[in-house]
Image 1: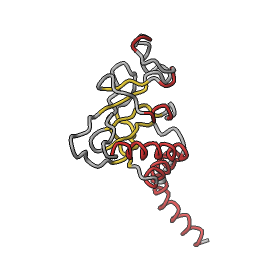
Image 2 (image 1 turned 30 degrees about the horizontal axis):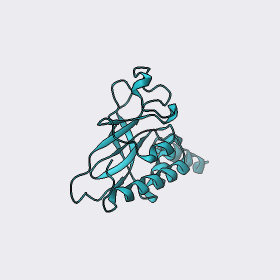
Image 3 (image 1 turned 30 degrees about the vertical axis):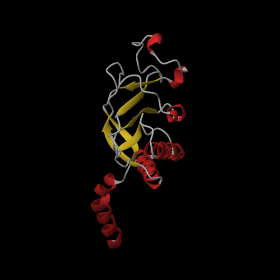
Length: 173
């Protein structure tokens, strides 16, 4: 009986520690971020400069990116491309004539305007809302709604884009 009482007291003392266990969502996010790190990407929260018409509830998005070597001759131009037709992001504000002539699921706009869309954009799932390149990184903004296979696919795309940007005479967007 005394062992039972001691066991009960130990359980009551340890019960508050259960709240520190990660939830299923937190475990999934950690798994995705670990897969990205193992594939050679870094993961961080960044402000995603979506335009005002994009009715997004948050500014901070998870950025999966690859670090770039600084450009030797002149700094790379920072360019941001965002999806404008992924289920009504524009809210109908943009007229059809203002959108690039691509399929509705592949409609991307750049900031600054009229920069050619990287080929990798056409291969991203709808949960990837934007891509960007700067002098020190290239990557994509995501809501982490996929799985580790999607992270592997995006890692291959980002690392290929990194190689292209860093190649001699590297293509700057």
